[in-house]
Structures are given as structure tokens and as C-alpha cells.
Amino acid sequence: MEIFGEISRNGFWFLVLLTPLVFVHELGHFLVARWCRVRVEVFSIGFGRELFGFTDKHGTRWKFSLLPLGGYVRMFGMAASELEGGEGVPQEMSEADRKVSFAEKTVWQRAAIVAAGPAANFIFAIVVFACLYATYGKQFTAPVLDEIVKDSAAAEAGLLPGDRILALNGQDIATFEDLAEQILLNMDQPLQLSVDRAGQVLAIEATPRIVTRKDILGKEMKAALLGVASHTPGPLMTLGPVDAVLVGVEDTYLKTVGMLTGVWQMISGQRSAEEIGGVLRIATISGAVAEFGFYNFVLLGIALSINLGLINLFPVPMLDGGHLAYYAVEAVRGRPLSDGAQEWGLKIGLAMVLSLMLFATWNDLVYLEVGEKFRSLFN
Image 1: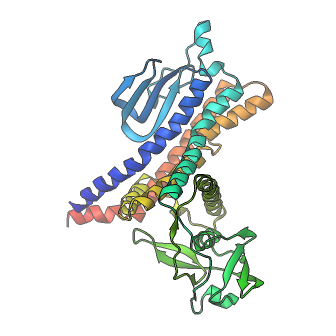
Image 2: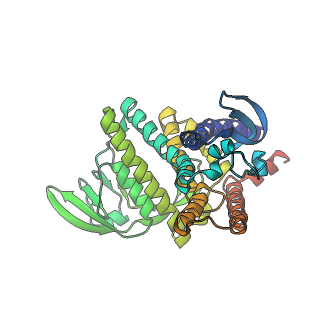
């Protein structure tokens, strides 16, 4: 019965991470909608049947629903899905209703309301980064190579112990952690390194090798390895408020670029699509990272917040980015797409999202060896 205890534990930590991120995302939609004087009917964490909630003085129903994997804000005058329990856009509205209807707002107001959700996730990441760096601190390990692994790509390229990496592919390298992250992102592509060797700046090209390593869950995965190491990890340094925010903005930007790079590498075939994970894998990783302490758990939450904001900006109908694409077309044409075109777009978007969810779930089941674990219960 150990497997059921593991599922419960991982599920708990997953919801601890996911619920605040969903709340922040939907709060972004909510606040800008209220700012644009749109009546918000429902603010829900989760989908389906309501578990509990309350109605505020503005008539908004705040609630927790049965399926906690997401959430939504339903606005007056905005078509709602059956999943959200909506009745669609009213056919006839009074003048008072038109003033608070989402559908009657300008295309720029509607775009701002939709974009506010992903924007809130990025802002949340910056704020949490800043708070973390101002209280717990940020680790700064100098990008100095203490060890060069024998017969590695680094040794072949001529790197030596004591070398300090100044830049990689034209991007400044401030810490050894930055270097390690960039190596992983570039996979087996040649790296143009700017190296400080005893005061002399050298240009060295090195190509990481793809090796099989174990991840945080002990599963084998392919990763890029240059063959360098640092044995002198830097201390956690607390930053002042301004520096903490600036570094938070920089780290949020770098993680966003890293995620986009990873997506492109999957599309182009440089990375395996097996790396696409869904709810099961994220939940399992949440449980594993929780054991490493508060600092690492918060860093995972920041990464998920950025991921949530980024995915929602993809121009796929059903996602915020899909709605923004519709509004861009409307702004150019001077009128919205026909109801038929939008309906077909939503059907295609729904099919794409469901297909990706199924694919990710299948990857999770294989990755986590769920079938083998359940079979072991009956052996």
C-alpha cells in the first residue's frame, strides 16, 4: 500500500504549489477586469461542482471546486464553457448591462484582461525571487573550473583547472550555476567560450557530449555534459531590495528563455518529446523537492509560475494566447472573426490541448513506471 501513501503525499505538495499559482493567474484577470469595469460573476479555484465559497458585495462568487487542476474567472458577457457552468453571452442586454459586459469593451481592454493572467505569473515569479534573495539570499559560485574530467569534452577542448569562464556564446557568465544551466540548454551544440586564464582572455570552442544520467527521481535521462566541476560552492548572499528585484527580473527572463529554448529543441528534434511531463510527473517532483527544504521548494514554485504564464501565452485557442491572437486579428481587421471561425478555432484548440494532455500523461505513466508498481500490488 506504499504506492497510495506516495500518491497522497505527492498530491498534497503538488496542490500546495499549484493552488497559489492558479490564484495569482486568475487574480490577474480579475483585477484588470474590475479596473476595466467588467462585472466578474465567478472566481473559481478548480473546475466542476462547488465545494465551498462566498459571494462578495460586488456579486462575485468566490469558490473552491471539485477538480483542483486549474481555475477560471467568469465575466459577464463572456462565453463560458460547460465546465465552468456558464450560460454563454446574453442575447439581449440593457444599457446598464452593456457597461459592465466583457463583450462590449474595446479590443484593447479585452486583450489587457486576458494578458493579465500570464503577466501576473511572471510578476509573481519576480516578486518571490526578490523576497527569497532579500531574506534567504542567492548562491554565487564563481565560474572558475576547479576540475576538468579526464577524456571529457572540456579536456578535449583544452580547458584547464583554474580557468574562469567569462562568457558563453556571447552571454556573460556570472556564476558557475549560470554556466551549468547554459550547458544543459545547449545540448550537444558547439559552445563559444570566453576564458580568463591567468589574466589572458582566450576564445575556446567546446562541444558538450550527451550522456545518460539520473534525475532527482533516480530515473535515467539524457543530458549535456562538458566535464567541468567546481568544488568551492559560494555562500548564500542576501541582496538589498533594489538588487533583489533586478536579479529577480534577470532570473525570470533567463528561465523564460530557457523554457522557450527547450520547447524549440523538442520541436526541432534536438530533445526527445519524452521529456514532456504532465500532472503526475510534476506532482512526483513536487514531493521529491519538498524533502530538500523550503528554499528549493520555492524555486520549483517559481519555475512552475513562469511555466504557467508562458504556456498560456502560446497562440492556441482555449489558452489566453489564443484569445490574444483573435484580438490581434480583430485589431487589424477592425472587426472580430466570425462566430463560426472562432468556434472552429476553439474546437481545434481543445483537440490540441487534450491531445497534449494525453501525450504528457502517457509519458508520465511510462516515466514513473506506474503499470509495474500497480502490478506489484497483486504479486
